[in-house]
Length: 546
Image (cartoon, rainbow, N blue to C red; front, side, top):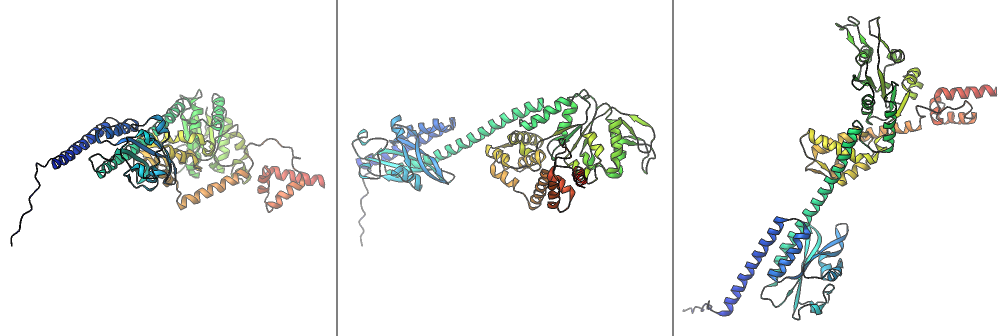
């Protein structure tokens, strides 16, 4: 059986050669277009510079005319609600101004809503094509096609890239669609990078501003950072009494910066070149308290092989800071009172009196008035310490200072741990919303944790959420602290205004006592009185009745 071979097409056929040459020309134009776009991106990532020029090149090299980039301007959840033309080439300002589309409206709105590409072979034959921006009379008289593809950022539709093209051009629409998909991807990446750069720049600018403020305050306010009115009141009080030798009692919750205020009092005084001695009264065992504060002589107790000066003697000429003074054992309070009143100390096991010149600054988070009522703190020692009471505000009262403090702590932690970590604006906003029961100390610890655990150089709001989410034990501790605050809120303040013994009627006192189940201390707290004031009024009124 003989098979007759089919003759091959003549390579000299003019139509075949034209089609082959045209295809080669388009591929060269596509390659040139890609090279030019890459050059643009290499010079700048600014969308307003890159995207308009990209649309220009698409028109000049491939005939994809009147290109426009519509970006979502309103979003519900992750879905765009409407979009507006942001970048274009070949459109007038008036035409661009008309380029507004609701999701699902016209071809552009459908692509925005569905995330699928669309090709209109003939805009005159497609009812869904709105001709909103460019009137038909302003387009070429021949058949005009329209292509629109979605722009994605992290799998979310954020816009539409669309253009016109003359339908009769010797180039498959599928090739144009492929090129538009590539440029839509490039556009999405440029927009995403621009957004990230904008957020990073805003975060750095906010951080620099806050850091400048914190540095300024650190230099002028001895490391005390903040602008809150309550904080400024406390510092003004410090400045007024710093030059005196009056005893100052710093009141406030744990972590509010009592040591910084104590050091500020010392540094603002004429004693600044003399010793500043900090004594944590809560950390000294009761058996060693007297020896630590007032010193001991050789042989005063087992192990006392040498004489030793106490903290008061070492602070001579300077300032001694008695932190957590409410924890001083009752047995040592009398000797502390004598040292404060007479400026004299006697070492444990010794008989010689030593005259001292010491400025005393004390601090406590306890309600000393309640401690006087339960017998754990001497009233006369309290009055001796409470010469100049200064209340330090809790961080919850200084929300405007939280961002400034957070940036300061982030900068310090970054330097300490050799990292470069900043806080995003959203992260700072989340930190400002937190209650901070542990005050500045807790904030500093949280920021250090964020710096160490952050996956990148910018702390996100999600990372802050994760760190602030309390563990079960932390939640119990917060509840206990909140309960203690509620109790303190119901108590009378440490320094009360004078009230006559006739300030409350007998019926009021009896009713308060009944509500407190017969507990006079609780009844007194409910009325803003000490237990002794309550008992005196009740006894006085009963005597008057008798």
